[in-house]
Structures are given as structure tokens and as C-alpha cells.
Length: 136
Image (cartoon, rainbow, N blue to C red; front, side, top):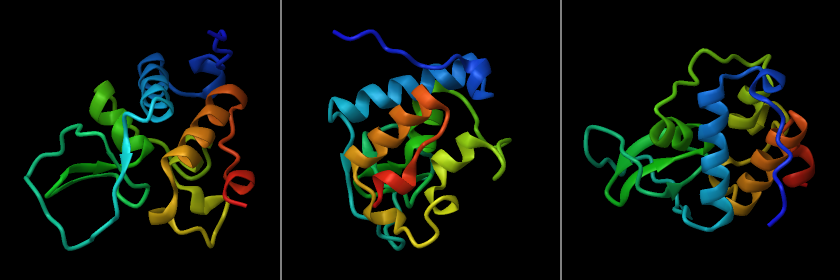
């Protein structure tokens, strides 16, 4: 197995717990333990989001009939017990969660699990998601 060469939490301007949560999400994405589900704005499930392994970049963490549908950040919050709400548009982690900042015409709901894994790996190793190359 290759040694992971991730930037430190300090280099990424996030906390250790947030970095650890994102590393866990990367593993889930790359092992295909998270599955893509279509985004349906009408589908409402339970009241409280819980991790169920359902992915769509168009939903932060929203209960649906299949379980909770979550993006990279929402999944990290659910499995890591962290809160990314304090990050704003001028941070790289925000750009990871909102690819439209880098690719204005991207369709969040069509971003695949593989593309999300590529962006998250890029963020953890370089400090930038690189959505423009991934969604090209």
C-alpha cells in the first residue's frame, strides 16, 4: 500500500478532526462504500440526517426515503462529528464543497463518486480541489 502524502491540518487551514473526517470520507469514496443516488428535491425522509452511504453533491446532508443523501462535507460532518459551517467562500475547503466556485456552470447533481474522490484527494494532497480539471 502506498503511503498517504496528505498535507497537515495546519497546511489545509482546518482542524485535525476535520482532516481526519475528510480522510475517512476519501477512503469510503475510493472503496466505493458510498454510492451515488439521484437528487430529488421533493423526496423527504426522516427528520434527522444520519450516515447511510448515499452521495450527491447537490445535497449537504438531507434525509430522503433511501436514507441521508450527503455531499463530501455533509458526509464528513456525519461520520466525523465535525462542523464545517464556519468556512466561507475564500477558503479552499469551501471550494472543495462548492465546486461551482471554480466551475460556475457545473451541475452538482451530476458529479460522480469518482470525481468527488479525485477532488478530495487533490485537496488533501495539494490544498486545492482542482474541480476545473476533474469536471473538464
